Length: 425
Image (tube, rainbow, N blue to C red; front, side, top):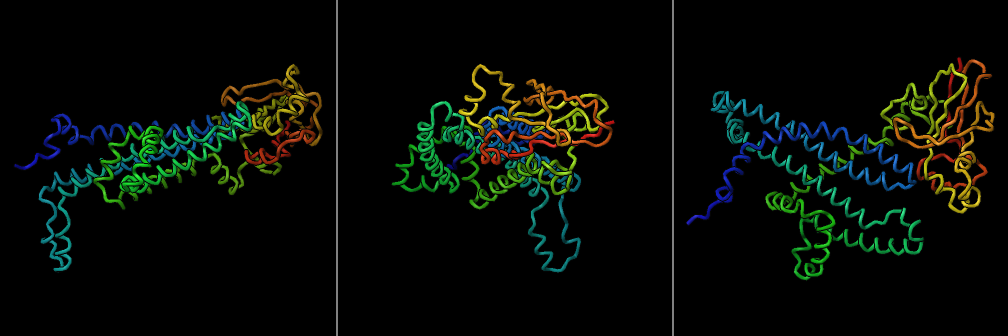
């Protein structure tokens, strides 16, 4: 007796959904793309805010990992919609011309006619295209879950830099050693994943690998996509599986890099439109009346490029990394626990107007209402300043010893922190 096929065993409701899956696919893809496109800018801003307020770069790394997953999902959905549009066009064509192509009518030469006769008919082509569309849609979710699983694993294995201050340098170093061992095991698990289970096929290695596999199956959230993953790789030729994953990962990384604030700034630098410390370039983000309010300030801003008032409202964003670059010992000796912390800000930031140091500036802590960036704000009197072009600079105090390497790693200039030209009416 012939063994019943898998499709015959499926519940009737599932078969119906499979045959009509294009409807929910289009609905989900269209709605999800709009939502997913809103996430990258918000995620970038939140990661930068966390970095400003904590002084640790891990938030940026986590955000970029999430963006790779999100961008992969977005690209998959976009490709799915394009292919579904093409599929619908072919369905319409097959309805109008159900008989398909009549190659004999064209009276081609024999070799061309024989070649074209081997091409699939319109119904077979529509059916194959339907399968590809569904695969693209399904693989988009698999890719997303794989990247999220890798992120969760990295967050568990690699200790956060903030732990060093909590547990001490020696214990933190011990965690780093354990982390190295964990990363080695993670590499073994990744190698097995990328080779489509090569280690699992080796009888002796498989016994040693099994405990590693079980632990990392939990860390990587493999239980959420394992069934889909094996369904895909066991019904797809290996080179096609590798090619599909490679296209997704490369496209996602390129999209993430292209949309990152660093890449935007580099492109602006080449166009001579961006702000550069100490340069004569005009950067609109320095002015509240001209800057894009959806972007972060990151350094400093004043109310306008042309000022008619008698005061400049100067807001300086404070990065927590400054305190790490100085060190707790200096802060304890010069600021202390009881001293007003605003005094520390007065020592750290020096303001000059046309090269003249501004004394007795009254700083106040401030959180920007639009960007939620934290820092200090001051109102600088300019009633006696003549009409014309002037320049206000914010410099890091040279008398305070800062760790130059730490600041450079975070893209902060040791000398001039911000330079803002303005015009007095």
